[in-house]
Length: 103
Ligand SMILES: [Zn+2]
Image 1: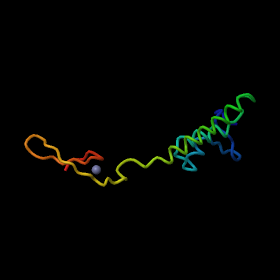
Image 2: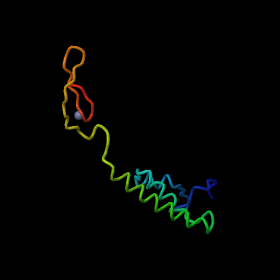
Image 3: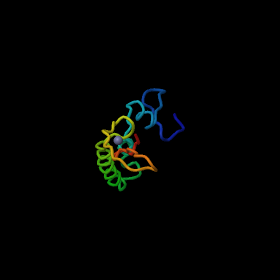
Image 4: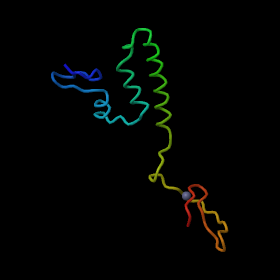
C-alpha cells in the first residue's frame, strides 16, 4: 500500500498520482489539468459534492477552450512592423506601432 492518499496503484507495485498521469500524457493546458484532476475524483467528497464537481469540470472545459483559442504569444509570433516616426531629441526615431521595437 502507498501511504500517499493521492496515489493509486495502477499495476501491482506501480504507484502513480494525477501529476504522473498529466506528465505521461503531456497535458500542459492548466485548465485541462484541473479538469482531469476533478474528473478522476468526482463525488469522492460525498454525493452532494458530485454535482459541484461536474459543474467544475464543465467550467474547466470552457476555460480550456478559451486558453487554447488564444493566439500564441512570445518571440515565435513575428511582428509585421508598422513603422511610425517620432522626433526623439534632434533626430527622427522609427518605432513599430504594434510591438514598440525601435529601428
Ligand atoms: Zn513590430
